[in-house]
Image (cartoon, rainbow, N blue to C red):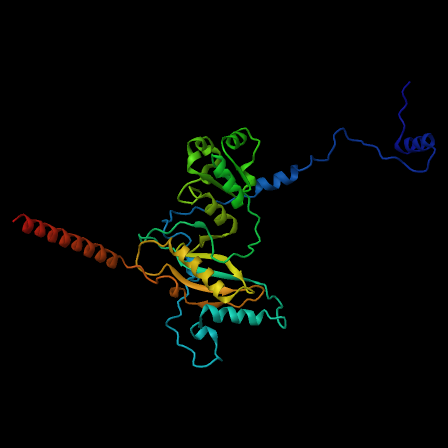
Length: 360
């Protein structure tokens, strides 16, 4: 016979069975009320409406126009400012003083004296600002990277590994004596194709013209590093090329991200403990090498040159046009070419007249 107990009696029975004074909680419902983890958060996200703002078509020459207006022109032209009359003035209202290279080097030596920075062997850095406008006004000169061998060598502080491809025992021996890290011929090409030699371990790859037909097999692996005469990595005189890449200085002319007509070259031309004349010759050689990349247009290519020497923040302006021509004028070149042609024509006419006289 089934007996039904009241709620108080049921609680007393449970206490007697447990033998404890505490009462355990019981689930009286069949379903669990706890929601799954993240369901409430998903529900809240569904309620939030994402508004997509529609933007009309903007022409390419008007995009980012507000930002461009706020940026300052990096080409500094202070020719309109007055020249200071004494040595005490507010710099932003007057022209930058122009130093000779010898004066600028001496100024840096004074600041790097043991009584001040105490860095007598500090590197002499050079900043060359360029006008990267090409022959067409809408085009710009591409970024370029070059290696120039300066007349007076110094420690550039870089570890350079040079891979040389050539044939012939004499050429291999000359390349090794010149300072090639690894020199070889067809067997070296085979090692590269089989994966036993990593090209990434070498900063520069040089080749002699006598191995060019066999070297074509590596064109896919080398890609832009494939030796060619334009980059001066392919030629006959291996010794000169190896010395250039081992002892020369590497520099990059890079355009500004927001101002495409402004380019900058930052490199080192020596150390302050070198002779001033040697430093000036190194600087002159560098400027002449940069000037070989100038476009065929009127106006300046090199706009400003500054000499620096860390840790000092001092920047001294020098005149680069003592070493390189300031302007390139097309009309003069055309006139000279036309004058040469007229001279040649006159010479031919005179020769023809002389021949007629001799025949008569």
